[in-house]
Length: 382
Ligand SMILES: [Fe+2]
Image 1 (spheres, helix red, strand yellow):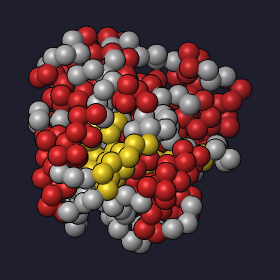
Image 2 (cartoon, rainbow, N blue to C red):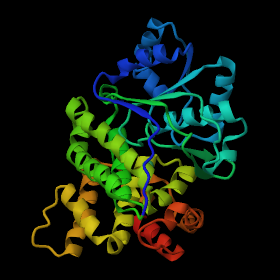
Image 3 (cartoon, rainbow, N blue to C red):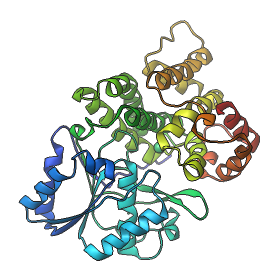
Image 4 (spheres, rainbow, N blue to C red):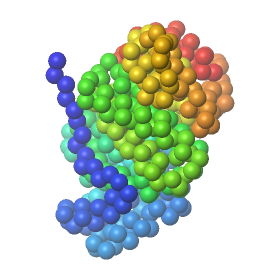
């Protein structure tokens, strides 16, 4: 069997890597940048130092700070209006997955025209997008190195992805110093998203040696460092490991894909605006328990990577310990762990089943899931 691995993005990793921005701009002779971010990042003071760097190399800059969690078609259109007015030759996404996904989306529209929904699916973006420098400020989505953007359609109440070789940032500046001020609840939820990427990539039907190596290292790093990053926010080493863990989980899942948990999460974002990481935290223990029989040996390895002792246990007993480890980590970092705590009502569960049953991630999940199975998982998570 032939496997392939895609990462079109050049990555600079480590404390201080933000400083590479000047070299990139000079090398490519960019003249006019638009920074795509949210008000939280702006108010945290992370944008001004970037503006200062740009000024030093005579690159003009404007700021669009209207990004919101679970970015919608409305936000994308607003950002695209700003792009049309400012006519940048470079987009700089500063923030979590929402800022990076918004920047990718308007980068698509800038060179391909149309509406973002026109590009739903994989491979529909024919022209390379406007160049994007992705600067993550949370350790979570891995969007800085993935070839996908996830957008919520407000009319259809649908969270969908646009993917393909062209849907990638050209550069990722992965600098842990930018994550030091992220509040504990955001650190926790985004960290669980990264963990979910690593676990779903590792247990995916499409996983293979290269993605497994990345996913395993990511699981270990996140399990070892998430608690410290949440409770000692200024610990640069823990922040560094978390950002590296989310980056390599991004590389892994961009190639091995995800699974049931992410499929189950989408309706929570689309209908209830549940932060993506919180949705993962609610559903990961339940989707993992469902998947155990289909990937027993790999889940036994997940348990070990997360620090569980599996000595003397049968393979299936060891695999169960993966669920224990996941539940304990989520409890320790204090993310809401039930659907009923985030505004979902029980009568809405069947509609969410209908919406996620068509998600391609269900069909590539290691264990076949019927609609009854999906409903039962939602009920268990309720
Ligand atoms: Fe995710």
